[in-house]
Amino acid sequence: MIDSKELDPKFKYEVAAEMGGTNITRCFACGTCTAGCPVREIDDKYNPRKIIRMVLLGMREKVLKSDFIWLCSTCYTCYDRCPQDVQLTAIMTALKNIAAREGHIHPSFKEQARLVSTFGRLYEVEDFDNKKREKLGLPPIQKTFDDLTKLAKASLPKKVIQ
Ligand code: SF4
Ligand code: SF4
Image 1: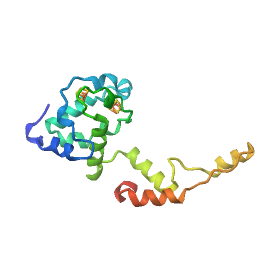
Image 2 (image 1 turned 90 degrees about the vertical axis):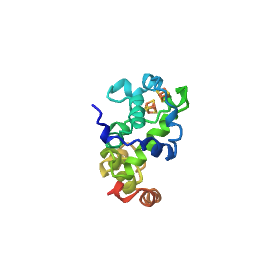
Image 3 (image 1 turned 60 degrees about the vertical axis):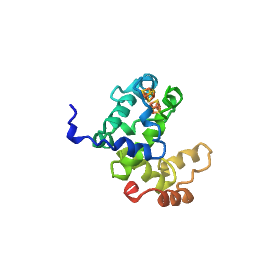
Image 4 (image 1 turned 90 degrees about the horizontal axis):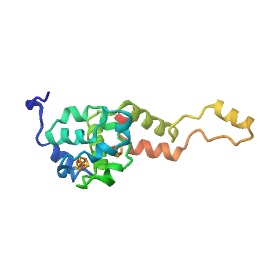
């Protein structure tokens, strides 16, 4: 059910003004993106054509607060196959950027940002890991990469890494 009072007719222009969002109004809903999407194959809740429709209809709050915009794996299959050059992968990134600015960030992405800003990588190396490597005659793994943690702290918004 769509409540017309909740629609924002300017949302598509907002997305079009975002980097990567320029071609959103070219979509003619052919469904090629959904048919070839590998994420859709494993989770039928994810439907790139529907996401574009929701944006074009102005369902701003629903789109920006949804988990599904964070499911795109940026594989670029839809980007290559779209007959209208909508550049859907870039649109998904544009939607994530708008959502993140408004504080709607999926917890898994927040955790990834925290790990990169703390350790400079996406997982924490424990003493256990290096002891195991020592037993195998392997050199220890560096626990943190200071240049990368500094870069992450300087470039990621505070609300993302807190
Ligand atoms: S393939 Fe392109 S034109 Fe077709 S539904 Fe997807 S985004 Fe729209
Ligand atoms: S880029 Fe995202 S939306 Fe497009 S096919 Fe890959 S996972 Fe699906």
